[in-house]
Amino acid sequence: MTNQIKIAVIGVGRWGVHLLRNFLAHPQVDVVAVVDRHPERLAAIKQQFNLDDNVVLTTQWEDLKKVPELTGVAIATPATTHYTLIKDALQQGYHVLAEKPLTLDPAECRELCYLAEQHNLILMVDHTYLFHPAVERGKTVVQAGKLGDLRYGYATRTHLGPVRQDVDALWDLAIHDIAIFNAWLGQIPVKVQATGTVWLQGEGSREWGVGNGEMTHSPSQGLADLVWVTLTYPDGFQAYIHLCWLNPDKQRRLGIVGSLGSLIFDEMSQSSPLILLHGEFEQQGNQFIPVNQRQEVLELELGEPLGRVCSCFVVSVLNNTPSEISSGWVGTQLVEILAALTLSLQQGGQPVLIDKRSQL
Image (tube, rainbow, N blue to C red; front, side, top):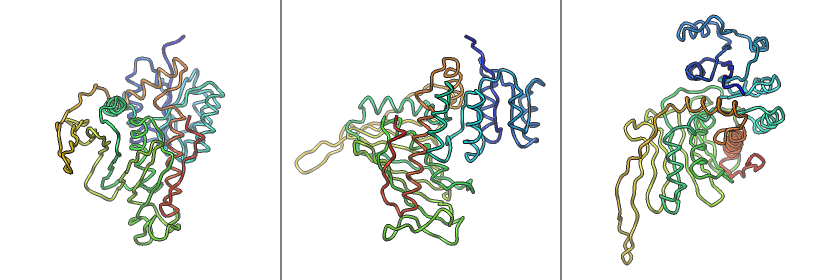
């Protein structure tokens, strides 16, 4: 069995260039082609990475069919293009690493997962946070029971732009926190709710999910700048997420509260991104007295999360074993949750049950 694979990177924009950088540095990867519809980007990355003249640089996806012995492709193009590109790649016999979300449609996601299985190919989604050392360590803390009985979870993901024109704040931001909650809890939500507000890209300020519970806003009327999400898990645990791209208070913070303390992942804290806050109540008569309060900064392994994603893809391809962390089915689960949240958003915040077909 060979221990070297040949990869093409499709799309070298803001994120694709980092995929290219990591694959170029990987000892078991030979980057043989780069595709981008902007010739100036191809020229820029050729100079930036001093690419060998043997590396095919092209604006046409179809040119990859001429590249001999191509093993796999890494796709970092707009989500609206994913379905067509991934389907074609799988039908050509290529393993696929796709930027999140897998597609914008759960049915398309399932079709691609089945297609990969049919052709005995790896389909993996780049959910980078699932490979973050803080998320990996946090999962062990939660599942070891160090928080006691779990109470609830919360997350905030806010910033001042960039404002997307293709998807709303829900599709832009929520997938990260949902993925982390799912990983830490080892569960998939069974019910979701979402409400939101449009200020920038609609006719005036409109709210989704207020009033009499009927649909008060349709996607054609604007893209929500602010979204509030509630996830309900099988055991009754609930997580609340605040998403906004209209807030200069930039936050990337997620926590789970238990009877013995809280676990906080604060990405904006460079010195201590993962903290375990110990503390509980001791009842004295009708009084509740805080006890055992202390802060524990959790040590993390070193390593760039995206580098771990690329290495996982390489190992999966070489061993022909799907990633347990971020397979196509994991990506499908997340898209299904987002689709259900979108439906709730459109229906005035009404609870929506999750289709369990992708909960494998």
